[in-house]
Length: 204
Image 1: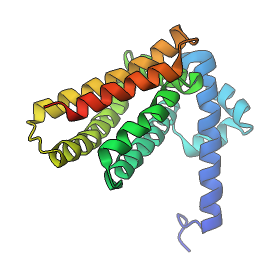
Image 2 (image 1 turned 90 degrees about the horizontal axis):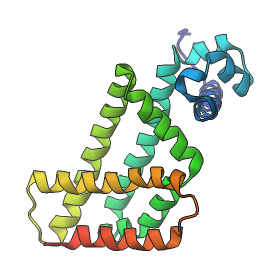
Image 3 (image 1 turned 60 degrees about the vertical axis):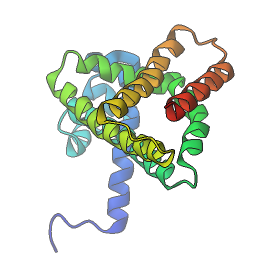
């Protein structure tokens, strides 16, 4: 039997342990920052030895890469679901409310902002974040292009790219606003966001 072979049950246990580490690391990064969170702290939060953590991740940058990949998988799955919807435009507009809710979730926002802050000073993390962003932008551009073409619009690539950046700025900026002003009227913001996204998708 190959040393690399894992039975389905072993694979499930390994994936559960990786998720356990990622959840513990996310908590430590939020509470202490990337540099303040040590592998020892993460291992304590995860309830396992530091050596066990190193069995799955080489270093903290590798843990961040896995966290970023997990978020990217969610966004790519969402884009695919929207494109498969009967009416992709309306499905996207309807999902805006959930997007606003997720952007204003303080734990998720705090973690994502900590990762971005680390990317500003750590070239390795910057590469991880920028590659994920490139893939995400490409997927969103495909979705927007499909919506616009279905409505008879023939946009050049620059126009689609600008729409992608606008949507990204809206939701990423909302994470900061949620931390600065946690008492905002979220329902009202969601309605305004829906109106803005509808206008963006239908404008000539």
